[in-house]
Amino acid sequence: MENTIFENDKKYIANTYGRFPVAVKSGKGSIIYDVEGKRYIDMGSGIATNAFGLCDDEWNKAITDQLGEYAHVSNLYYSEPQVKLAKLLCEKTGMKKVFFGNSGAEANEGAIKAARKYASDNGKPSQKIITLINSFHGRTITTLSATGQDVFHTNFGPFTEGFEYAPANDIAAIKAMMFKDGKVDCAAVMVELVQGEGGVLELSQEYVKELYALCKENDILFIVDEVQTGNGRTGTLYCFEQYGILPDIVTTAKGLGGGLPIGAVMLGAKVENTLSAGTHGSTFGGNPVCAAGAYSIISRIDNKLLLEVQAKNMYIIEELGKLPGVENISGKGLMLGIKTKKPAKEVISACIASGVLVLSAKDKVRLLPALNIPMDILKEAVEIIAAAINN
Ligand SMILES: *Cc1c(COP(=O)(O)O)cnc(C)c1O
Image (cartoon, rainbow, N blue to C red; front, top):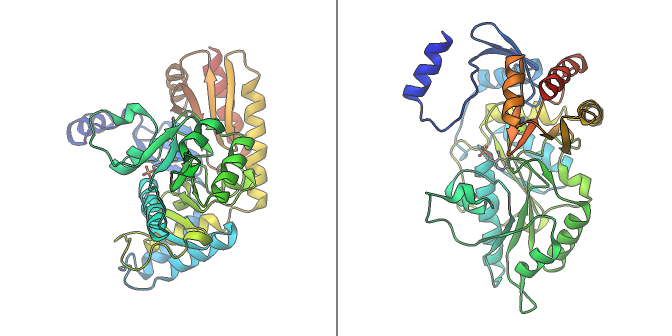
């Protein structure tokens, strides 16, 4: 059966993914079974989407209850699951309004549109948005344009104009791009606080604080892409909390839906009314089933769970950090990148063979387990990962 799936996938599905040789049959929590009945511990949670693992009971109930009411209505009508979720997100973050889309890229498109419209509404001299080198903001042409990695820029031009890339953690360099002849020369700055696809690289506290202050003083919008870092992943509900800032726009997706597609653009006080009627929209955005699932996720990311995420972070760093085969570990919470002496590819293959699904980010082994992964299962996974690194 497995071979037929592999062959038919290759034959009928656009070959855009370098897939691992695992055909998933079912899962529960942090355990996945493949079509041959092999058991895996899931240390990737669908790239940080299955916040509470697979087939989480409460999440399942929330979405099936909503399916029994209605699966979709047009955004031309009011929908309670969307309203409940937006209210919860605003209350928990201090943001003012939410626009819902279906993915991270779409959320970032919305943020970029909001930033440009804010600049236009306020007669700003520049529509330029500065992002960081090594960032990742999505796969649409505009979010690819925002992505500061040349590897993504071959073959797909012409690109959306108006983006410039600054080196991360270098305040002088970005400042030189933000101002021209002493005057503001950009509309917004957009950053990931921990660059995920770029290799799990954190922005420093000083850099973010200085950059945020510069933006605030000069009415430049500060946009944080929390598509991956959000929703409890880094040990706080949103990563920006750890930097003592309140961004003008926060985008998120991945873990928000707990395994169903939903993205959100959270708009702060400055831009809460920028996207006015008719200026933006989405047919499926904020789908009631996805929104009901997301509500069940966000309402359960409480202090107790976040402390567990932080404790698991320390456990993993302690156990793997002491291995001679590990050069360093970066990241926050349960978003970790392990630089191994051995090529990451070899470690990942060995892990898969031994029943642990891990990911990569650039040259690192990346761990993104479910936030609620049970401690005994995490221990089992860490032992297997350690063996894969050492052998
Ligand atoms: C995954 C990711 C995206 C893109 O999200 P999609 O849902 O795949 O469109 C954007 N930004 C960051 C930081 C991401 O990690």
